Structures are given as C-alpha cells and as structure tokens.
Length: 203
Image (tube, rainbow, N blue to C red):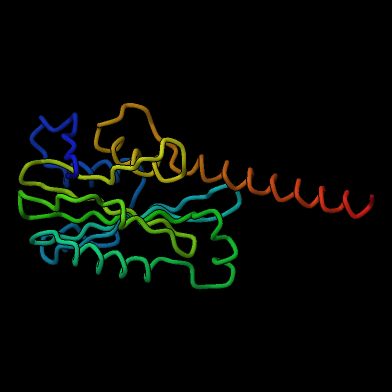
C-alpha cells in the first residue's frame, strides 16, 4: 500500500491544494488560467521557465480535479500528459538528454479514499521530459507521492522538491543538480572510450 504523507504545516487551516498553489506562486510559478477557472472547470496549470546548464526547460504543475482515482485514470492521464509535453522539434529532441522539462500531474481527488497502490509505474521519461504523478486529497489534507527505491538518481530530487514545497522537507531541493551531473559524467565516459579507441588504433 502507498503511504500517505501528512504535511508538517497542515495545522494552519489551509488544505494541501491551496497550500501547494500558494507555494508555487512564492517560488515564481505563474498560472495560465484565472483562479476562478480552477473552481469552475477543475483544472489549472502553473509554469516556471528553467535553464539547466545551456539547455532551456520548464517545470510544470498541472492540477486536475477527479471524483476518484483508479489505475485506468492514472494510465490515461499519464499518456495524455506525456504526449503533450514531450519534445517534438528536432532542436528539442537534441537537448532531451537533459530531461529539462519536469511535469507534475497533481490529481486532486474528491474522495477521502485515494488510490492505494504505488504511483511509481506511472513515472515516465519521454522526449526530454519527466512526468510525475502526485495525488492530493483535500478532505484529509494529505499528499501521496511515488515511493522511490533509488537513493541516488535524477528522480528522487524531483519528488523531494514537492515535499519541500509542502513543508515536509526543510532544506531547499535542486531538482536538476543530479541531471546535470549525470550528463557530464556521461560525456566524460564517452570521451574516455574515444581516447581508448584512438590509442588502440595508434598502437
């Protein structure tokens, strides 16, 4: 079963959705729609431009209200978001190694009995973008995250960043630091292999 996390700052009377949206605004995110549209239509998107080394990118939070959560809804919404945000141009595909776009799909569940299985299978990397599902349950003021096994990697900081926004982590999280490190390590490995090949051909 998935573990529900109780935000540290949940005692101030604001539910988890309101607090996350307010923190996004404080962090420099801009909403694409008027807040009234969230109340009326149940969807709102926050964006912030990013620059990772020399690769431009963005971090996106999509809030979608749903009556209840199921495997079918998770699969369909994941596929839809992936197709929308993955790289399509040649230039964007060339820079996709940086995974410079991070999309959090925040599924706001009206039920107080959210999906109980792991969210990990619905994390997706495609075309330079990383897609992470987050479940928010206003009725019980809780958030549900993927429970990643990896201790070191590019995915865990992305999940920890949401925990930081909600007050579950005190230290600021750099979600792109490990991505840049992994890129330069890959470049170094390729260069070493090329040097080894050239050296073997000379001798």
